[in-house]
Image (cartoon, rainbow, N blue to C red; front, top):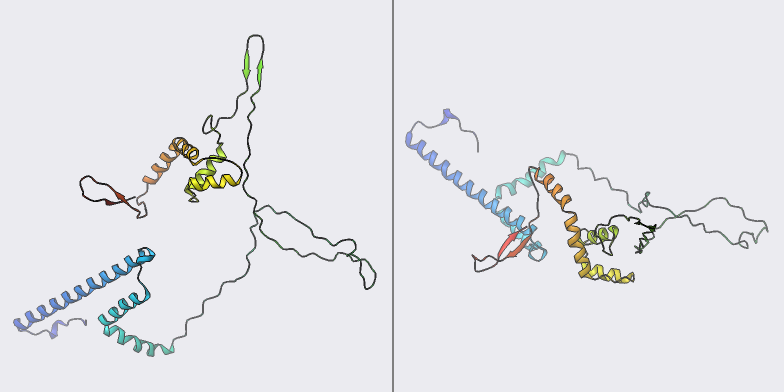
Length: 269
């Protein structure tokens, strides 16, 4: 809208009142159009956040595009004119392509050098009859996976005695006393469940492949005992978390039974 020049305004009060009414109607119309655009954008964002089965297809998105162009005919007509006037501008530079190909293997891993040599018979030339001598070597690398291993630690406590005293050597304390799980096994079960999303019944099958029978019920008891011992660490992390001004959480919905309602409401975690 061009700026209003005070010198060009009419002196008639009725005409001025009509101008004010027209401006108010125009503002209301623009406000309604903005509300429509907001709702349209909200629907698009909700469609993108929904699960895959509820997301909009390409055909549905084209309907929104057609509706947007229909509501803005002036902007759509100005786009070709802008394209014609921008003919003198330089075309955008093509993005630099990243280097492709095999990346070098991790340098922090232990390397095992295996030398492949010719046999003594192959080191003799059949053409000239001379012996071959080493001139260079070709090197290539590959990954090899070493499966995890379980071992049994046998704690032997020696006892000493005299005529009046018996002494027994102490052993290092364990996270769960009188349990068959050591600290490393407990850490493996906890990390596999919460970081690698491996439920206990799958871990039970994994241990079976190692020839060890550990039931999911036993591992569930380990998890409960470990949670009690890790509670001080949880409380310390909670205090640090609550010191932040903003805490970001995911929008996980669960069904919650409420006695005040005839149906299960949706709770948020």
